[in-house]
Length: 120
Image (cartoon, rainbow, N blue to C red; front, top):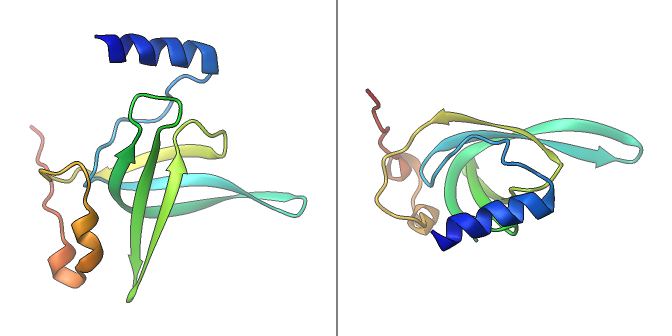
């Protein structure tokens, strides 16, 4: 109850409503974010698996996305309430039983797969 009230008050004072879809660790998402290079601005996509969501239901909420390209893994931390995120697409829902998926860092290939959550 109090965390819900706190979230509503923080949204009211921050002036930014939650415009992104709900996602959780294990989901595969595509983040469209703005990059400024010199005087040009463009939108870049980062697609990967959500490892963790930190400081949930606060203004400092952020999430970590891990992408594996070949043998190189890249992790990126995005703050939720930044104007640089244009949109977030949830591509696939993952079935996991942990809030932090740090164990995926030590795995590669088929060992790092996450089962898909089937919805009815």
